[in-house]
Length: 342
Ligand SMILES: Cc1cc2nc3c(=O)[nH]c(=O)nc-3n(C[C@H](O)[C@H](O)[C@H](O)COP(=O)(O)O)c2cc1C
Image 1 (cartoon, helix red, strand yellow):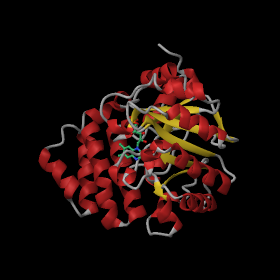
Image 2 (cartoon, rainbow, N blue to C red; image 1 turned 30 degrees about the vertical axis):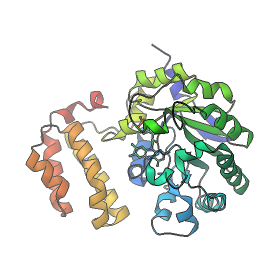
Image 3 (cartoon, rainbow, N blue to C red; image 1 turned 180 degrees about the horizontal axis):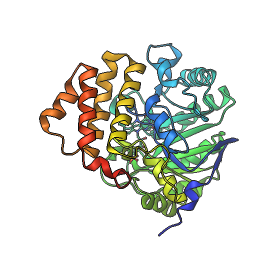
Image 4 (tube, rainbow, N blue to C red; image 1 turned 60 degrees about the vertical axis):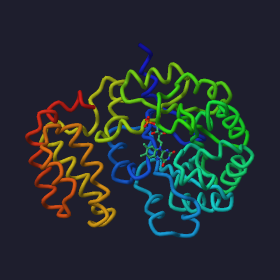
């Protein structure tokens, strides 16, 4: 069993002190302010905004401001996506103006609507262009700049070590590597050992990412990759405490802020729901909250009847949803055993 204690130690990223080495991954449509607040409160060392299109930000488009808004956390990290150096630089300046302590550049998103515009992981097909964006952002702001990437575009082009080395030379202070290629999307399993080639290519911190959900997996990805920190995404579905629970396990401590009873979990889910309604307004908030409610129900209230589940996930009346949730969680046997669920 690899050593887990390293996970709880601090990490310096270009002069910004990160409290521990277990991070929440940026996930568009999921890691908004209410979610990041919760992950942080449970003990995640670092949380990152959902990606923000730099062009939208530079043009002042509605919605993008919400994504970069400072949520009062000790380290505010904003992720930018885009392909125009001018917009990336301007987006970075705007984000720093809003209090960003770190700017991350997205070079890993596989979605066609992003790569179709030659942003996200498409940048790994043209490292000179990728570097021009990195240089523009590094030149535009005084805060540390980081890059999140995949192993490469496909098996025939595993150029993450080259991109990471050139990024470091351009002034980037940390890189995160998802151990898949763009063409894998989310299929197969993440190759943790392949991340080691990036670690060997640079001297800045490397964050390993992909398919981690438990303390043993977190320790294992660090062991196999030699990386300095771990970033966790989908294992947070219905469990914003996942990163925090891994840090807590490394310290042999209880998880901060963990709901301790089925009723407390019900209150927790309802508070998350209400925070989303407040952030987005009721009409948009209740739609956006449905995926979270579905995950909470699936993970902690598996006995919910199909009718009840459908009522919760389709209702347009927040009062009704809240009453159902209170009822479901107070009677759910799984909710009584939250620690093992985490
Ligand atoms: C729904 C969803 C949205 C995502 N959005 C982003 C994003 O905005 N920026 C980014 O760099 N990666 C994004 N990712 C990728 C994750 O950050 C992470 O690299 C990937 O999910 C692998 O980690 P995991 O196996 O721990 O989930 C997203 C992933 C998912 C599933």
